[in-house]
Image 1 (cartoon, rainbow, N blue to C red):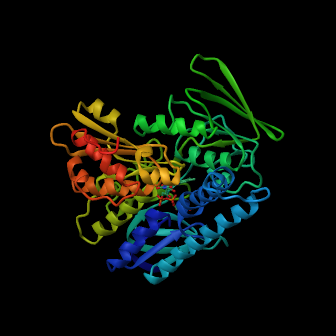
Image 2: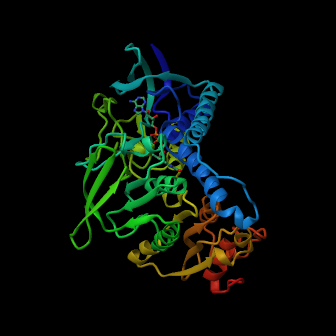
Image 3: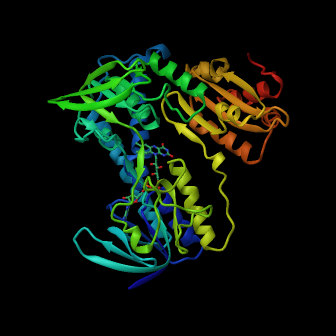
Length: 468
Ligand SMILES: Cc1cc2nc3c(=O)[nH]c(=O)nc-3n(C[C@H](O)[C@H](O)[C@H](O)COP(=O)(O)OP(=O)(O)OC[C@H]3O[C@@H](n4cnc5c(N)ncnc54)[C@H](O)[C@@H]3O)c2cc1C
């Protein structure tokens, strides 16, 4: 039987990063993945393919709607070749997952393909696709089995017309009318892809606003911009049934007044969140405890109730984000090596890759109000930036929340072009506990979108933004 210092079950961004860090720290490492490609949800059916389609559809939208304003004329009709677009996306995925294989090889990590299930706290059975089973032994085991799309109890996903994000990444046709249940990140990103490609898109959301976990100002701005893009929103609507009739899908919901509203479309994307995945893991055999929602219970060091078993990523509490899973993978590897790493969960940024992009880190205004923290706000509109006007991406703003007394930055929230990248500055500043004045006194290259961060910091410091 092969023996390891550490075995990791699941090869998503949590698992494969943990494996690399364990190997870097000198541990003999194995990783077990049930699929034939590494990289988990993120690389195969999550972050990477969704961004590939967002980018392709954005180019199409630019070509059909914005090139003309830039003085670029394309004779003849511009058409979408969906098959080619999806094939390109798959090419990006294949290249990226192959990259992880290379990294496993480079770091001398043994990869096992098959479903890993606990035999006991130090042994894992690996059931391979050909039915054969192999057993390995490991001093430490990291559970990194991730998550799967969740649904509502009364919805029967047929994966053809009533679909999850996984199927939405490889549709064979552009929907005429896609009904998206859920105004969270995944629903909005994929809804925007198909809207740009020509579908009518209606987002039906239970709460009274989209991206409910984020600062209210971001929800408001993104709703406004997406409405301009002709995405329809049915907020405060409680979906009660989803039914397929031939090629049609009928979604019934109750609005705020309790009246029934019927939506008819040809596709329904169910994007109501994700649930932890532990099927086939046989966590019981190792004595690992799960909570009532199926999440593996861990302490502050991400250790389960069993001494040598840890868990990371989507399968435990906290934000379901690839970079959160990666940080946790690194943390556990370093703990196993006897180090004392730390993650500040308050500084894990959240991003929505719509266009304009939405990004945030730290506390929202709602959270500060609820906690009774005295704060000040500095906000700067993208439209006041030369860079934004040059590219005609003038929607959005940067909003900085700072402590009223100490000026320490407590939260940064932004909507606009390239915010997914801009948020890194805010994370860095907050990691170093910068004040708004610190940011405002740093030189920001001109003309860039980053100038909006400086201007918002000037506004927060003492209301002295320069360009408004
Ligand atoms: C459409 C979509 C878009 C997304 N976009 C983003 C984004 O832009 N940015 C971002 O930060 N996050 C994004 N996410 C979320 C992100 O994908 C997850 O947070 C991330 O993948 C979680 O990583 P993980 O390592 O915990 O688990 P996963 O990536 O889910 O990987 C778990 C792996 O474990 C394997 N596995 C499970 N059980 C077993 C077993 N018993 N034996 C062997 N293998 C097993 C699974 O097959 C899987 O490969 C997106 C998700 C979706 C669905």
